Length: 386
Image (tube, rainbow, N blue to C red; front, side, top):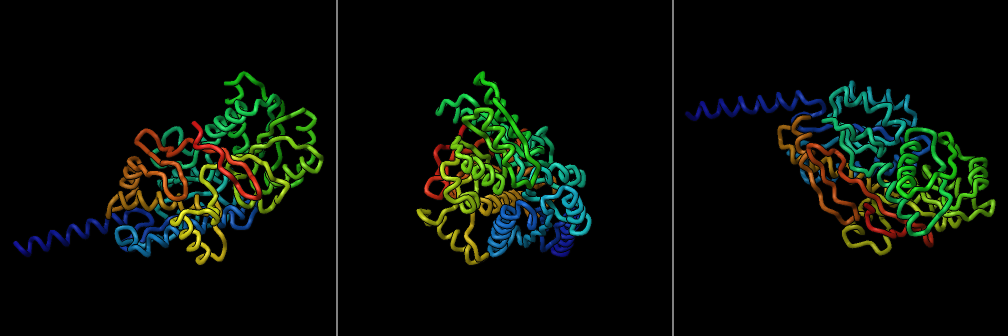
């Protein structure tokens, strides 16, 4: 009887190891996760802290013994915010690195180009930094999103600004790609609900820094409120150009421009700028004890202060860790997906929203908050808007 029990134990172990070996990126000792970031292009100032935040969360997990004894390894490829490079990076991560999942890929153009490749290869596509509707709908077993979609949060944010400040001429400056178009849809939806037309819109090419003609056009249209579908550098350029010409119009930027780099680069020029926050910036001044300790650990690890992109990278990696733990020791894509579909996390010391996923809903959060730059830092003005 003892011999039979031992034999059954050996067989069970062999089956377990075989199952693990069949899951790409999963071995007895390791789980390999891939990510495509901009580390050298126009939004590298976002990609680097996102990468570092993810690394820190994985290192924390590994220091605590890993996930069911497996070490987490993050493999990051640089796209330079170029969809063509991103496609090559995705193929390399799948074919050479055999990653288990893709985590927090950065940038709507990058995500739109690579998402079909990722899910086509049977890999989970998790929490991309592109709140585009297609990252979670129509529902797909491998697509999960934690960031509020552009259309939803810009609809709510635009309605809030309109109802509290009574603007008459709403305009949009947008990046000429899927990101800008999704923001546009959210603004137009809000205006339709308020029976108000969009006064004017103008676009720019990704990476542009001279926005003088666009600002002149919007000013000529008599805009008294401008929504910016811009990233950090373009946000600063747009506001600076407006202020240089003496135009003090109110502006609201999406979460893509809600970053400490915006007020660090723009200085006094961007004072008064409104923005949508999906997670608060981790300022050391006034931080709670858990947040202050996290900030100090991040400083020591990376030699720089964290920003909101660091927090979002950490939060994305944290959701992966929680789901992988919940999936159990015999990790497979099917078990991971089942774990994700039952995952619910409360608000934490970062000030994040609750994240709740279900079998019929792979979008964990739909809401953002209004913030404003005051005295050189972002100040949260509202709770999550619904």
